[in-house]
Image (cartoon, rainbow, N blue to C red; front, side, top):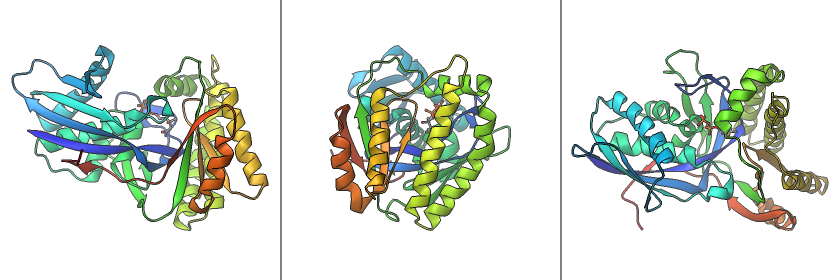
Length: 328
Ligand code: DP6
């Protein structure tokens, strides 16, 4: 009645931006990501009939109420799926720096879904696990697999065809992802809230939907051909389009800080020097820069030299769901 699972974070190259069903976490568009090796969540779940509610420990301490409520709501969905009544002890260890601008919700919800299902002794395939993880946080459905992953939006109202599929394993293309942490004082608008406002108010949202599937197709061709230039161009353009929908929302909002622009310009300068690097940005000010492994050191040095960049964390494609025990 107890199991441990580990899931790694992922970073979207073609963004999931907008829901068609908020309760089931069904997206308006398909998306594409890389799972990262460096950041992950390890979660232990133990069901216990003596418990009157779920108990959640995060990084060795009892979690705050809001976190426990969020986790417990997701556990309710897992219990409904499994026909289970018991509550559980849940212990999560996040190897994701909170300030890294890398969503720990993706790795967190994926690890929780995997550990809970395993603890209940239910055998599930990747597709089923992905559908389950999606209902904790949309991007979590992609963290079930390693390497390059597509989340196919699906068509059905019950979400049974909205799940991730693996495109290329983590060993199949040697890319580097450099996560640039910048200073930020601004209060954050969560991606959940941001995408909701955008869908309902931005006149550009329609244009986002009209072009995102074309971007996805181009990214998939680029990945199949290992064409880094083609992939870089489309991922950068796709990120900018996503952010154009926030600037045009009502009220408008912008995830960028001046340091965000410093990194974007740093990447442009690298390209002027003939070094291929491309950026992407999620619902926060930090910038993730992609390059080929051979250019990693040059790109790292250039980004680290930008005064407004606090730290550059180097990642590579990482694995999908793993089950414990893990060596400590
Ligand atoms: C900008 O998966 O965090 O990072 O489904 O509401 O939990 P919820 O949102 P979440 O949104 C991620 C948005 C994004 C783009 C992406 O990861 O595809």
